[in-house]
Length: 202
Image 1 (cartoon, rainbow, N blue to C red):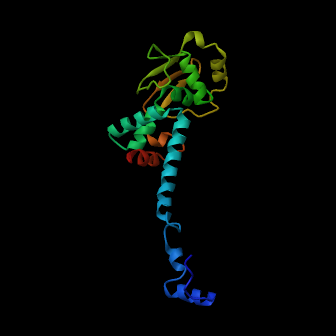
Image 2: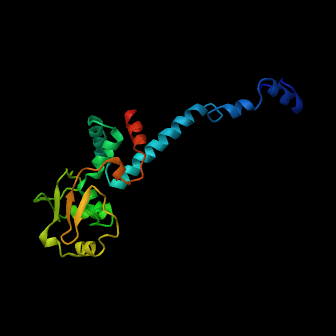
Image 3: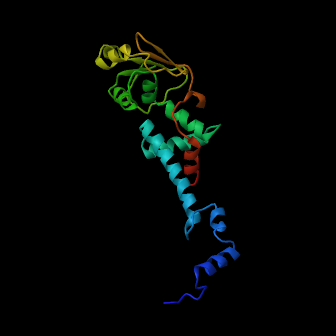
């Protein structure tokens, strides 16, 4: 074992550190102490980006492969990638049903779509990831209108505000898509730029 050959007394040691800058060096460093201090900041940034992506995935109920596909499509579109990504997620049929107030949760809306309760522009659609477009008309199938989920939707209509890019006819629960939403019309609490930064590294 190597022996300590520096100053013996604590006072001398303190004096020596004062001469070379002392503890102020540690205070001024923008990264934690230690061999891997600089790397911890990058790890923390990555963690925040990953958490934001997972939050978006779980919010909209999308698997990783599908989510990455949405991101790649958002990159190809004109405009800001993050805003494009949110618009794509919002235009999913299950999300539109949820936003219109016909289901309490996106999971419930996805189940209603899967069971074939909706027509889009007169065509039966049972794919939750189906993407609506501007001026699309979404109707509840006539045989489904008197079932419990839609009776409940009529009774509770108005409990949750319908976004401005949609219009719902309370009697028939018909949904009209005025336009695809812009960022200001999407109230999902997400920092989409973190998701873009995460995927842009790969």
